[in-house]
Amino acid sequence: MASVILRLYVTGNTPSAAQAITTLTALRRDLGEDRVALEIIDVLDNPEAALNDDVYATPTVFRIEPQPTRRVFGNLSSKEMLIVGLQLTSPTE
Image (tube, rainbow, N blue to C red):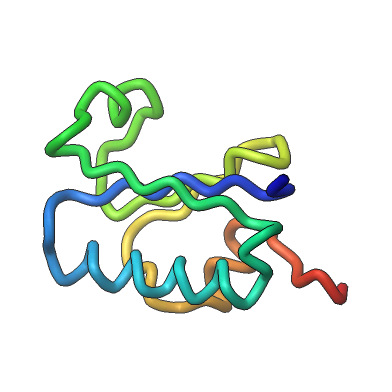
C-alpha cells in the first residue's frame, strides 16, 4: 500500500498539464511506484472535486497523505521543487 498519496489537478490536454503529468510520473517512479499513489483529476471532467479542494489554478498537486496536506501549483516541471514543496523524501533517506 502506498505511503504517499498525491492528487494532481489539470485542465484539459494543455502543455502545462502534460508537463505536470510527466514530471509527477517520473517523480513517482523515482520514489517508488509501490510507495507513491498518483490520482489525476481533469477539472473539466470533475469541477466539483476542484471546488471541494479549493483549487483555483492548474496544474495543482496535493500531498494528501501523509498528513498534513501540502500543495504546490503553477509550473510543475521540476522534480526537485516538488520534493521540497510537498516535503517528500526518497526511500533511502
